[in-house]
Length: 457
Image (cartoon, rainbow, N blue to C red; front, top):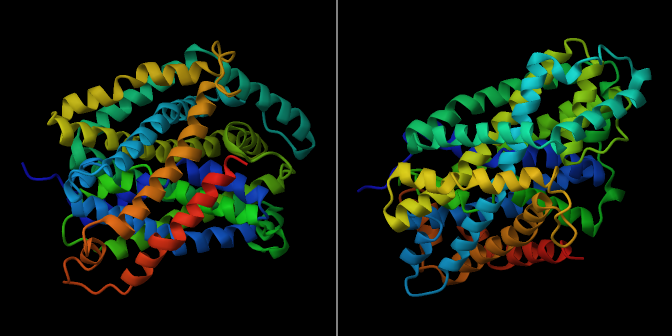
């Protein structure tokens, strides 16, 4: 049976961008920018994407298309009778653990979207003025706590998004993943541009925009560089097995260098637009001192911003549509890593692989959701289950997989693999081969190791 492939160049780009543009761009990027000096962090992030992110992405692309298999299978095909397949196995484990708690966040997003549409999120709040900031802050903090820490409502919405993911993934590569991406990626950009226009039209938007785009280089420290590197690897979906898996669906004529640049530029564009939405908005309503980290930003601070704006329900609905699109394309790509493994390694049908990969999430994601509710007293190293899986997967497993990929492609892969993949077997020119090889051999492993060490200091 021939290897399944993406059906069009646009679909290939849309699916890969969808895998990269997720919650890392929407809720991690603003928090890192706020904590690390605004535009100074932004410039470092851009530099890290092109100096380190693109080469590591190309290493994963080369593995995936060169091996034409899942994240474990590519190592077994390219280097049989060696233990390098463990790198791919850890990548699959990381992607699955992330899926367990990402489904919960996606469920919260769907719940907030529902309450935005019905008006329940703003019930008894009404249209506020900037003098109501402190009162609104308390209202939305309590509301976020009541929504997330409840047991059954979050579970119902989590189960709904799991079923939604199963429905998409049963369609396969072209009719499922590619078709979804072709629809949702344009929707994401249209909604994001609309929100950006509204945020930039607010009376005091200029101050927040100046802070976001005016660099203060005195804020750059070693910690800022490490955080920019971490954001790069998280926002480009490196180390999760996603890019290896998706690249195995690329036709042989796909130009990997061009694809990596397009994906990186679009991912950066999303982060930039998100910044142009959030920083002017929170600055305009006196919320720039609020935490922009994680759930607090998305489920407390931004609903509070929308409460101060005309057409509150409209803008709140559009934002949570945006967030749901980002979350769905991420969970679909994360789940596909495990599905591809089950199909390629064990010869399963698409139906069996989908059900075997996603049905256990009804248990695992339930435990993650309840860790904010009735299971909040259960902790691992002082963290609830949701936070433990987040820290373990993103702070430990992803850097380890990225280092393994770089070392393998740079030193142990079959001779000429990288050059052959970047030049499509010598049929196209690629001037990046020497640079990419240098980065993944020397620079990337050292910098990723610095991220890994910093996570435990």
